[in-house]
Amino acid sequence: MDFNGRSILVTGASGGIGGATVRHLVSAGAAVVAAGRSEQALAALAEETGARPLVFELDSEDSVRDAIADLDLWGLVNCAGFGGEIATPMDTDLDVFDKVIRVNTRGALTATKYASRSMIRGGRGGAIVNVSSQAGLVAFDGHISYAASKAALDSITRVSALELGKHGIRVNSVNPTVVMTPIAEGHWSQPEVAEPVLRAMPLGRWATPDEVAAPITFLLSDGAAMITGITLPIDGGYTCR
Image (cartoon, rainbow, N blue to C red; front, side):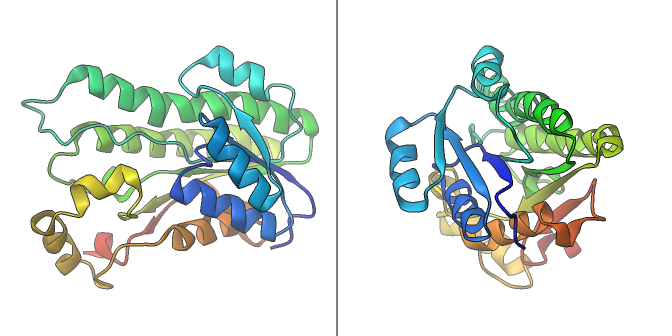
């Protein structure tokens, strides 16, 4: 688990999972570039961890390209996300759907596009981890937009693993259950929503940011050198049913 100064970009670094991932990677010896939209939040994280802050707009290809095209990267964690709305297929707001896809799916692909170019240019291989969701694997009420964005991200993971493997670059997804970040808590803190899911989950509780960051760190590490193209549920056993 020693990254020996390898440079890894983490998007969504000011969020709960992103921040925890930055901390884990820094502790493991990585040179972390912590990316996001909030200069203030990233500055605080950088002061705490020593990570390099980098501000850009993930939904703008020009912004992503200008920010990371010249970086010397070995790895990438696509952690930025947008929760969208709770809606059915009958009443979904297609403008919200478009934004969810633009951030969760297109944004991750854009970061992968330019990060992988840097990784190939470096000629040292590398690893990418996409932060997906259990909602990409199983159906949940009201999650039509979010689930679509994460299922598409899982497909991007598999195709990217196929395409980038020839360059020694591994690509995997983690698919966590609910982590009580600001994205999730508005919906999942409601007992009538949470309790049926928790009853169906063998471990019966939500994940913590550290419980997602640790598997991300493993999948980036040399300990996972023969693992690519997978979607790894971190869901307390919910999807085993």
